[in-house]
Image (cartoon, rainbow, N blue to C red; front, side, top):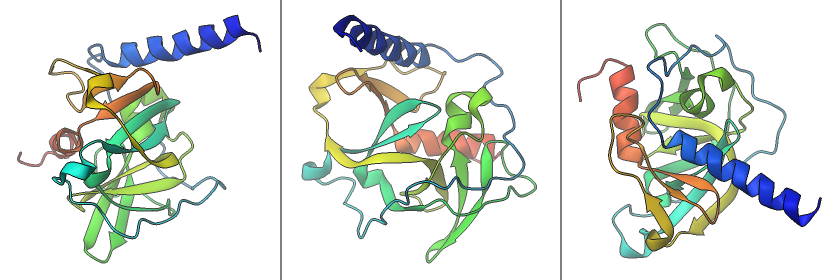
Length: 197
């Protein structure tokens, strides 16, 4: 692949991420397949401990994951556990983007198909990792390629808060990844599930 092709590929990814930062269409969510069998992919290594979300040394450490072909960064302090994605089946009353429930020592979490949230036509896309979020009642199905990276806040193009995808708060152009605000993401899940804020 020549230098021009690399440049074109970088521009395509940057354009795609920029498009994600624009308002979403009114029909954002479509139902994923009714059952989910995990692909035969590399298993992730469980996290042994979760950092304190408010500690200064953790403020810029992020976990990189991918869903629907989009790379995303989640603050490490917002991720409690990372385990291989188990077989899941949706339950009645769950949001359409919910793949099923996962029991853990602290209770039970609903697992959200991150690909379906980003791009409804990609519902059921390949995922091999379950990320349990800080509230322990919600988890994400995605693919994790890096354990963690340090992102400089000054290198993030922060997004002005909007009604559309309020959990997508910025873009790190250097790594070609979107930056997620996990509390806002959980709030969106609770809204989809019809729970009180």
